[in-house]
Structure formats: structure tokens, C-alpha cells
Length: 570
Image (cartoon, rainbow, N blue to C red):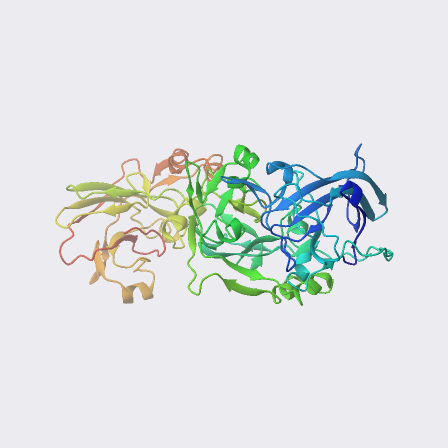
């Protein structure tokens, strides 16, 4: 059958028995499948009738043989209409008609002998012809998954699919097999790719493609794959390194029709804490996993699906590239052809923002098939919640004091602008958004420092309102040239400023920083670690009274007049 797999047989017509011996360069517990093609006119795996044999070193009964009927090419899953995929007959209301005789292990070569009927006694069976007809066959070798079912194909008839596929005349005369010699060289696995997406929001395109044989999915993950996997931004199952608080958009092209190819081209995308996945087709996954995103466990028909698009291997170049140890993933990828089921493909969209409830490691997977995706490493704590104060119901007074910016979870995470390490606290809240109403009067009582010489000016923070999101007019020429001052500063007399005694919330080194690093803690926890201090026992406020009117833009900013990127909130 191939350089690494052989089959021999003997016909016993009187007892309706075909004696089969399969030998292959396989590992302990790997399978060797052989049987009759699902089509009388070509080689195809769907609807084929095969026996899956294996030899497991150390078992009391190391040799095994099990009758399979393949309704489609993908893994065996339990659907609403029964088991579908590469499933044993005995889970499809039929019988295991294969009887194992013996097995052997000679170094790298394992052999299994078994008997199967010549005739077909069940709908899942295909009769062996003994009239001189050459029958198309199907074969594969590969690993057996934890469910004891045959799983991914390491070598298989897909390399010779169609009318030019392999055929056998089971009634032909005797012949001898050449010596089976297992290859010594094992190519290294494809390099595992990690995408560092912690610097902000990102969009990824999720498409189906081949798993890369022995060098791909299983070698990268240590998990047995099926022969296909997710490609994210043209990369086979990359590890994603993400950050809590960022938003990640997955545009999914995994198939939206569960009936296409009997479901083998239907791959809803979801995120789970389970490294196997396949919730909709696997009761064991369903029982143990926690769904993170992409699937409503109370409405499992609401799925992230899109047009089926895939990278297809080229039979003339892809497989030889896999076997060339000098070639890497980029060489292999260049042999693939991108195709879609529609000329105008539509993506299913999943937007996911990991938060403090998200585990440190999760997995992107297919909801209907096991082991198509891989790992997401979740880092960092989510940003503090952005607070909005609705002040539209009348006049209001706000106390403006200095305080720490809240590290990575504070100023920059809330605003998207680079902060300086301190920011305005209004009524004990870090840089809240203020929603105000034209005609109302807003009084700001400011405690930002009134001495420009204290600490070299670092404790001097005049308060003003501007249309510029950066601020810092007195210290930065670029701001002065572009901004329009709204209130709190006379551009003709820039010494007439809104200042007051310097008061601040100070972080406690023993408690504030650990609280920032504890993802279960929010802003209120952090605020409770701060200590309030003033430069005077009798602090005096600078006062700004502001009444927005028809000339006021829809969005303005309260800022510091001599430090930019200091505070920001519309």
C-alpha cells in the first residue's frame, strides 16, 4: 500500500472468511485501517467499510481489530441523528464483524491478523468481490484517541483519491510482499508559533486547513488531531498571548451548513477551558468543560459560523514537502490552495474581551469536532471600570484632588492615552467621565497645588477645561497652538489660574501595588489602600464655576494647565 504499510490476505470461500494480515511502521497503540472504498468507481473514505487494527505493547491482549463504517471523513461524533464520522459499527446499531487472531511486534513493525466476512450482512458492510473485479480500497494509519476510536490519518488513501486510487483483485493468485523497512529519519515538528497580542485590540481570521501530518498538530500540541485544524491569520494553530481588558475579534470561516458533507465542513468556533473541545459532539467534553465565549450553553444553536473556507493540500506537492525534513511550515503553507464555498464569503464574528474571571489558559476550538484548535495564554488584569457621572439633573459641585493613575489598569487602560502616573480624582473617583447639561452650573473645588516652586513644579496643577485631549497648555507649545480653552484659564493672563492647596491620595507601598496586581480586585479595593494627605492642615480650594452653553463643544476635557497627558475625560 505504501513504503510503511502492507496488507496480505487469504480467501476461505467455504467459511465466508477473508483472512487479513496488516503490517506497518506504527507505534504502540497506533492503528492500521484497511477495507473497501465507499465507491465502486473511485477511492473515497466516506461510506467505506474498513477494519481498524492495532497492537498495543504491554496489554494482556495487545492485538485488536474493530469493524468501522465511515459516514464521512471526520472524527466520530454523536449527533442528533446518531453517530457520524469514522465510527465503529458497534455504535451504529450494527455488529463488529472483525475477529482478531493474533499480533506481533518486531521492532518498529507491528502486525495484526484478523478475519472479516466476505459477504455483506448489514447495511454498514461492503462485500468482497471474488469474480476477478478490481475493487477500490481505502486505508490509513495513525493514532488512536483517548475514546479508543481511530483518529487522525498519518498516511492514508487521500493521497491517491479518485479513479486513480488503489485497487485490489481479491481473487488473484498468490504473490510475495517485499520486505518492509521503516524509515530512520524523522522530520522535526513545525515550529510552534506564538502571537503576542497583549499590546491592544486585535482581529484574527479563522479558517480551516490541513493539520500538517506528523509534523503539525500532534507534534505541536501533544494532542491527537484529526487531520484538519484552525489557521489563524494564515498560521496553523498558533498560541495566542492575550491580555485581560483587550478586545479580540475572530472572523470565522468554518462552515455554516451542518448538512454539507454530512457535517464534515461545519466548524462552529468557540473558546473553552477544555484542550479537546467538540462540545456538541462529545458528551465527555460537555460534562467537564466550561465554555468561555462563542457558545450559549442554554441555546446551543446560536453559534459562531461563517462560509466554509479552507486551505487545501496539493497532492503533488504538499505531501512531499511534509516528508522533506529541510522544509518548514512556510514551505508547506506555500503548497496549499485557498478555496471558499462562496464567491462572497461571510464571516461569523466573535468579539471576546477576557476579564478577571477568565482562566490563565483557555483554548479556541471547534464546537462539533475534537482537537482542531490550541492554546490561549491570558495575561494581566482587566482595567478598572470607567466611571461615568450623570450630572445632567441640575447644578453640581465636584472636589478635584490628585492621586495615582492606577498603573496599567488605570489611566492608560481607561483612556487609551499615555498617562504620567498621576491624575485627577473627582469626588474620590479616578478620571470619571462627566455627563453635563448646557445651562447647569458646575462648581469644581480644586486642590491641585498653588506653589509652582514646590518640588520643582511637580506639585503644581492648575485646573482648566479645554477642547484638547492632551492639555498642558502652559508647558507645551503644541497644545497652546491647537487648543481652545473652554474655562478656568484666561489666555490673555495665564497667571490667573484655578489653584488650591496641594492634596493627594498617596499609594501605600505595602498594599496598593499588590492590589493592582490582584485581578480579582477593582478600583474600590485599590482606592481603599490610598492615604489622603494635604500640604496644609487648613487646605484652601481653588474654585471654578462653569456653565456650559450653546458655544460649548459636545466633548471637552478637564485637564492640568502645565502637565500634558496628565488627565483626560470628556
